[in-house]
Image: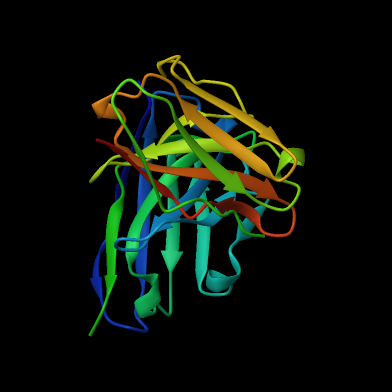
Length: 117
Length: 106
């Protein structure tokens, strides 16, 4: 059974940093692109970033470029999102998702990030 | 690049519900659809315009042509109440999601 389990969310002040993690199991993690997708409270879905199987290519939505960094550790079947210079508008549930053929086959349960003073 | 969906669609149990997703030349891109129930993560229900992942009921179907993709739920059941999002990939913005449509089964 495919499982994606996010962790690392919480309350952080504007300008602060947070590192999200996603532990994958039940599939060959190293064979998949992986993405982070977020959902602000009561709002729709927004793709944030993705990373190639070997980590050699990374892409970001414009609003997080220069502030967020996606990475992965295939030996640990783990995906990460380092978030710096956080803003109120980054408040959202962050999902990790397997990224295959321009679709998201599997999603984690999400972790809530709240940016507030 | 934007994908536009109607905010809400109402349907009677057993009837057919259709949700549209409009975007420039969307028919030339592979569209997919996700179902999200309250408090839950999204679930892929249609990919590559009209394919169903394993475990998704046959009552879910999709089409995509011109500027519009459509998700159709035949014989809608109460369990189908959810928000549905379309999604496509575009070289200018990578992944884009639609605005979301709430299906209400009356």
